[in-house]
Image 1 (cartoon, rainbow, N blue to C red):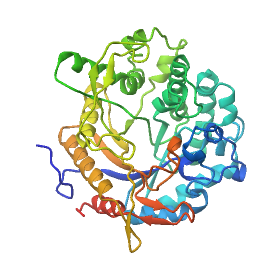
Image 2 (tube, rainbow, N blue to C red):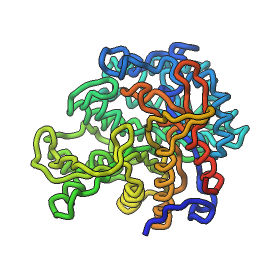
Image 3 (cartoon, rainbow, N blue to C red):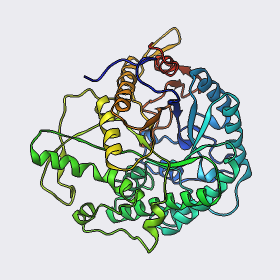
Image 4 (cartoon, one colour):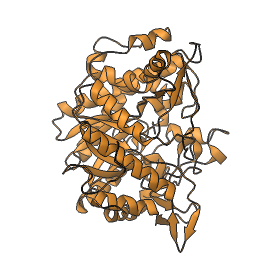
Length: 451
């Protein structure tokens, strides 16, 4: 039976890495400050109806100015690593050309402050805030964007590579490609399946080019890719549902890991869409440049059932209703789904190391007393998912670390500030930070003790 306890005797090996994660557009604010250029998300937020209540990331958590306080919170939490993203338009305002020194200096100060407190900086090069100038030139549907990304990556390696030992190229490229170009829910807000597939290929090409630039530059450390995989469970044990669940995993998992590990694109997936990727000679070898680890962002697991293939659902499945508890996002709370997806990846691709690079939950957090933010639902969520990580390790999965999402309540993309994932609450008016009960629970988990 899966265990439900965590702690010093709970199976986490010596050297297991504990961390927290954030992203630039969601927390930094300071839009237009110190030479930062506009991003596709700045533009998207200003289109009526795109984001809840017309909110945007102009201020967000104001971490561009308040980062010392955030570093202190990380230090008091006891984590060994902080995963943050660099804002491409803060480094290259138009996505090309020489670097904006003020932007690089900000990340340099942040890295130094983390290291002074014994916290390893983990840098994500791209967490969705594409420079607007590149977006207007075609964004990820344009092949040139991949080459511009490699140039940008080289600038950041050169500025921070002496202090950063772990890099991730892209965060959740499925979201960038499909939520951005097919479903219209994220910037740039298109609804074009062929554009999404072109974007997917160019994102992977950008990843491969950035890995090659890292290796050829002689930089020390490790580099990998972060995906948000899906391995939905079949609604029944009927063969049709089992096969539907397998097909349902491809777009979020195999579409990315197959080419990264040298297997090319999954042919049945493309055939179901009557599509082909815009790959040129040499692209697939570039995409398959060796990586040191894969990051897994996990929030929920769906159930699926077989359904007739259609233009809207070419893979022939539908989401099946469940009785499972939901978060404020409407996502099923399935801790053992994390164990399953980690095991699926470890058993299907030659992954040397896995990290849970994001895991967390949005809840309302309305109960407060004496300045204390009580979030029992989030505590329970973390307890279950940390137990699932321990179980995955006992299964033989090479899981090396875990990053909670997120340190702060922040700008949650199309949901604006209406969904809160933070271990620390952020007052939307004063920007005051207040640790929640989940912060203290995670602190104790990091230290190896139960709450």
